Picture 1 (tube, rainbow, N blue to C red):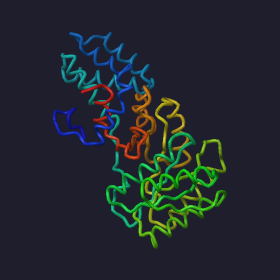
Picture 2: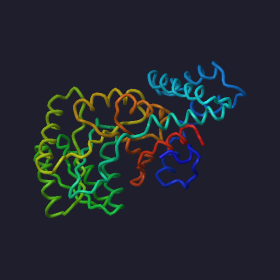
Picture 3: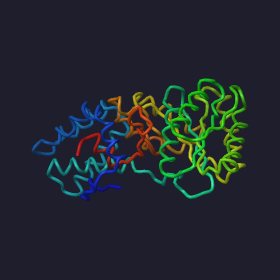
Picture 4: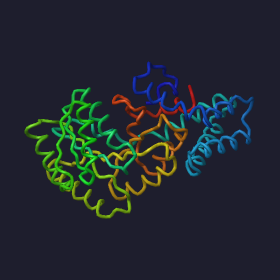
Length: 316
């Protein structure tokens, strides 16, 4: 996973290129100034203080910034590093370590049917993400079905139909106001029988943590999934709008507690200068970033790669 930052030059994948390009706006802001800091002739206390300031201003967050700088300083001292360029490399490596997932993405594990819930508040890019995920996995040879589990808004069902058509996948939907758990039950049965699908992507109502009834509905859907498919849902992906910065982390905390989130999808990263908040997500939540929206097209979704992210954030 560490590849280029650890001395191994390899050709970049399409996902890595897209991820790095999506960070252009963030890189051209405060993070572009971090590289300049490490062009100094020597490592000083002022360098570390200025680094802290830039990271905090770059929306990394106080707690994550202090830990990152401390880990970098300790390695620099322990390894007897005198060159600012070598210290800069250590900073990048510590960023990568902070972003490393602790376990693999369960979507890719072999099983008869994989069930993935996609959750998040309205306006975060949830429906768009479902369409992009469906397209991505269809292109990889998976038989994908979309489940229109957000029955509270008629527009949500219509939007998902449009994305299903764009992605070229089937969709299971009922009328607005239907029981979401019943829609899910039908979608699982259809996936297992008539559609012979191996990946079911489930839309859910745009839930705010204060909407107790909606959270109860999600729990019911999870119980239905578990009864029909072993260990389902296999992933619960939370869609967050990257442009909200540290506010996205507060939102993620609430969803983790109530929805059992296993991974994050960051949308609108290409349109924000607040990419630094990504560094806080796994540190604070213990939940890895899995995918990143890199644009508005159906192909503009990249699997998150810590090295590509750090290189996109700071430059190579």
